[in-house]
Length: 92
Image 1 (cartoon, one colour):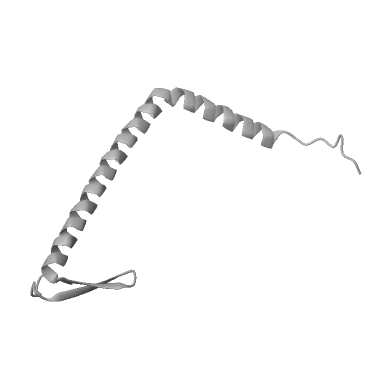
Image 2: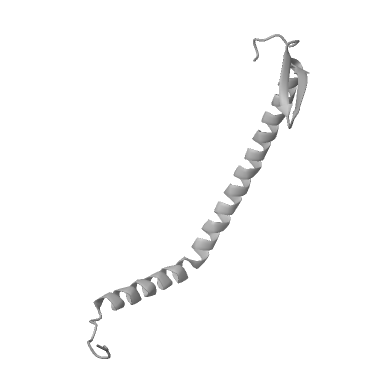
């Protein structure tokens, strides 16, 4: 689009209406949209980094508790697997 003349006409269908603009105004609109998208991506990235820091702090703070709970869960699962099933109480 940068190689085209700015006085060329552009058409866009909005709903059932056809809107006519010149290429210069379309380029300006597109540049504004691109900058808005970049700003939004920056905000999302900053929020993601902040959330990652919070998660890492939480993991570091409560890591010993989480490790103990995971070990207890693994132990319980292993006990369930290794216990033999008795034949008592089976109705035929």
